[in-house]
Length: 362
Image (tube, rainbow, N blue to C red):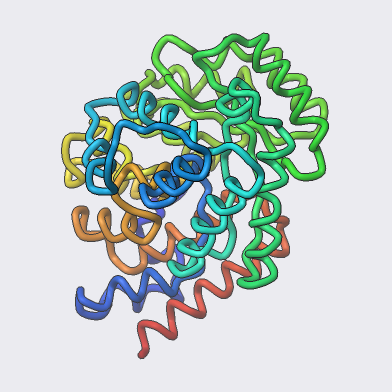
């Protein structure tokens, strides 16, 4: 196993950051660090204001009379309860412009919080099952990505996720549609209800996707057991694991993840909201980081889980006592774990180091 990433000595030029500035400046330090977001469901950025606006636009009856009532509904006990409201509210997303507005709202927030590159999930089956054309979803999202690149210089990759509670045959049909938009979609993923739906269910789908040149990721080890992480790596050929926090229950798996530098796209506020951890102070992110795993911080479904990427960084920094050097490592991990090319990764990591030094000196 390589030296723990939490040890500042592996980045000698960053060791000065252990001293840090007062806590009140930590938010600005995090915000100004360039970073990538690698675990973001675009449907999960549907804020109540936009949901009610689109419901009115399309004449969709929602059982909520106000923004406050809708926000109060974002109180759920587990993953399945969350998914129930998540899918119900997706009903208001109907046309290309809806997906454009949804994505642009997220991209503006992400830019304001220091995100320079984002790799965004979308759930085609959630929309095609409602007779929404696949093209309307992808083209609306792509309009927003193109605008964000022009306005902010933000780059992106789009990842089409298969809903694991549906059949592999349905996923294969969805893959046919994904391939029609191959130029706009970089990878496939696997999400939705984890328990009872192991990665092995989708071997043939992922084999075909990889043969077609698509990259692969998968949710594993959130509510599901550690063996789902191994299956995703060995049977689906994924490049990174979304969530993955239950790897801590299997020391051999932890050692493997550290040795192979498999990126884990951890979502701290989501994990607490969905009762994976009862409190943010009990989250294992710091333990995983110090064990040498390539951990990243992401927001998952931020409209539902109480915060975007900045709020997630702040939550773990304050609750777990992360040093500024460790915050920089998390930002570097996000770039290293992305699907950017190697030259671009090197440029951003150099920029992270330079920005961190400037921020600490100021």
